[in-house]
Image (cartoon, rainbow, N blue to C red; front, top):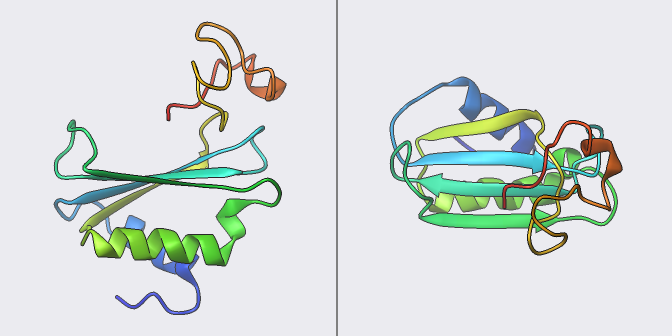
Length: 125
């Protein structure tokens, strides 16, 4: 499956194929609210319920990484380099891009992303 000029289409098509075996690539978007993705985390797993064997993150100060074809191209290149057979992409932004315990204390809401405070959604990575 060629990447072409539109890596977002490659990701969409690959994720619609469903489970096709391991390695599994996961793509999750994070942002200061549910409208703008400023972080994308990509992991490669050799089996479900196992720790990732590879992990990479991309950050943006502005814009939305879900629409950034250059960053999505790097995501696709990363996934292809690990020869993933299954790709899972989050449909929505899943939480705050800041790291609990690094960017703000554990047990508190992120001071940078007040829109997530009510939902309790914080960054996983």
